[in-house]
Length: 295
Image 1: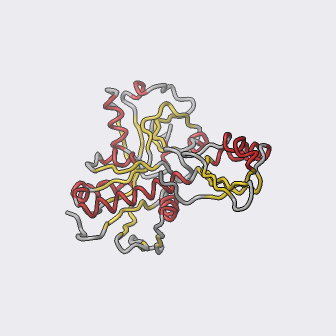
Image 2: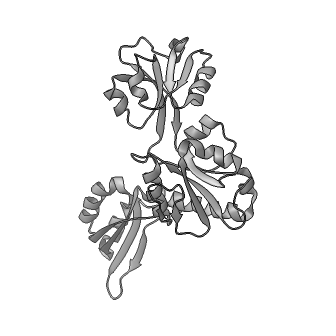
Image 3: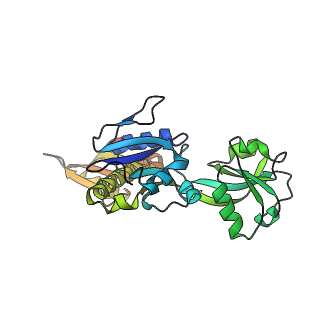
């Protein structure tokens, strides 16, 4: 039951820990979003998008039901809810950086539990009850799983034997004297769509456009544009050490034996690349940040 008909997309955006990173990525993709502190209806500078700010845990259910046409949420919550939706794009970003998050089984440092098999008959606390139960079922282990309303890390060992918790770096677990037994699920952000909305030609095209722009914004997060000038005598030496998405763009400068060169490179290599370019004869080197890279 899609709520809005015609040329409009109802898009669910994640409220909470993923909100700031999502708004930033949408901005780089070309969509400015503003929201008041008490509103669940953000304003988007695109008249074809109606946004709803909803907990990431709930978005996949509302997309499946058609209350939302599309949404941005974690693969973990799609799995938790076992939602029947179309996954249009995987977007690797999280609140602390461009990496997947992990749901892990963790226990106190001095716990005798060393593997999932040791959970037989034990008590487990987690916010992701479905993920935990699916994990136990795959391993033929019977254990009691209880929903945790928060502060899950502090519940072991006094209240429960183990926890299933989300982590990016593991620092919070270590701070609570917990060790990771194993990773249960890796999760990235997904752009998902209601199946009926996906059959609508206009909505599909609009959502595919949003996906393309988001992918481009994410690709630009780790890229920069390098521009430089080089003489004809040094051109081959400079271009031979330049990595590029395809090949460097080389443009003759009017009235001289010099060329302007530009290329997109990984930001991680720039600090070693620039000295090499300078030594090879490059001059006037400029490094520019990017908003989007569309292959």
